Image (cartoon, rainbow, N blue to C red):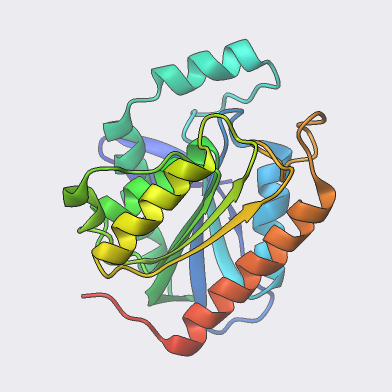
Length: 229
């Protein structure tokens, strides 16, 4: 774990880095409502193996749970302003690292973390890419206008919290604002289908495809060298 400053607080994050010492693109990984779990750290390590410096921020200050009631309380107690402050500070930490290309820092999150990845895109104009795995979506045009990052949205057709009609409405709003968005809605998948710990909702084939789609999206971002103001 690596400590960084978020306002007056010291916050921890799990850092995964490629083996070679060159400059790399970087990703802020944002956990689900369970906290910074072993699974999230595994995803960070897998992304690092694909050439990214990955920083998974511990928004819960060390608390991790597998109990839905406790997770709900932890999520409820996490204020948006503090979460965004932590994530913006993590962005600044990555930009300041000598092994990071500051023009290619993205965010990736799952569920609660997916929602926060988009909120970071709204509040951090330098963010280059954003991967939203079944996270809630902004609806206000003033927020959508602030998004400079290219966005990949991954969702399940059976997700009752974020149904396809909400995803398509977000897609229309992004298109109207001339923002970059790719969307994939997986048939037969519900919420949180990528994490095998969610035994009833886990869909291994969709999860595997979502992973490959994410890597391809991030790789295309590199090739197109999209830069932000």
